[in-house]
Amino acid sequence: MPQILLLCLLALLLGWLGHNVLEHMRERGIRAGFDFLLDPAGFEIGEGLLAYDASQPMWRAFLTGSLNTLRVALPAIFLATLLGVLIGLGRLAEHPLLRRLCGALVETLRNIPLLLQLLICYFALTGLLPEASNALAPLPSVLISKSGLFLPALDCSAACTLDLPLTEGFGISGGWSLSPEFLAVLIALSLYSAVFIAEIVRGGIQSVARGQIDAARALGMRPLQVLREVVFPLALRAIVPPLGNQYLNLIKNSSLAVAVGYPELVSVANTSLNQTGRAFECIVIVMAVYLTLSLITAALVNLYNARVALRGTR
Image (cartoon, rainbow, N blue to C red; front, side):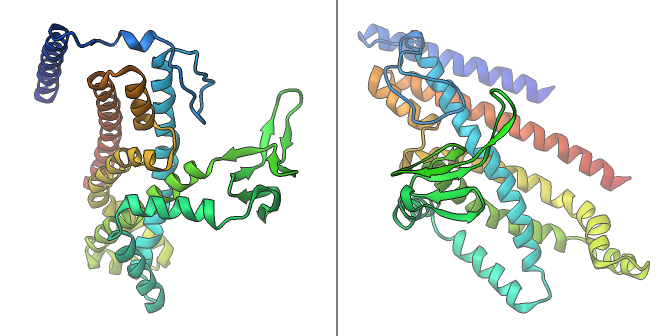
């Protein structure tokens, strides 16, 4: 109840501040308000989950940018978690080479700024890969080139069949394509967040009392059983809270995608600001979207944390 009251007071304060700012802007002859959201956007967005064109209203452009943010953030959260768990376990491995390699990876990636890693990934994808006409095929019906990654897609327009990507002339047609901008953001966010998650996983596992592990081994449990049935359930109580913070950081760090031209929320807001001159309104929309995404993420992590805590105390 106190948290809900505090949130309501914060919303009222922000509303009062916003109203005053808009009134002062109008008094000085500066156009203000959110009516521009109903005007035609007047600019294209290179990729997105929604069908969109420049004649559609500005609010749809912001919606497309917001969905593009989720389109890259959600897969990055999954990949970062998976890689983080594997690297964290590697940090605790008995094999010295694996342990040192994982440690070197953590120390390297977490000490290089994310923006620099993002630019390295983008220039590697667009500079080192071949042209579309000479695309690499690491797997059957999977092509990768400077134009992006092309995967088989399910086409159910008539009968459900596989639509395979094929090299045609100077380009690639068919299949499901992922742009180099999207891939660069996905790779950079996943790797950068994974090394921090790895340290969280390592610390959580090391927080489990040695006696618990020795008792499980004394009962004849295999190493994987000990990890799955004893170590991880106990370690989750220490892992989940800081893990939620990393998820929040990852979602907010996705705003750096503007540096490589991926059309996420901040990129759309910058273009909208240049088109309309409504700087204050565009900034407020971006803040509101990121605040909403952060609150939803925190709520979901807290719900899971409550379940883990209850299981751990029974």
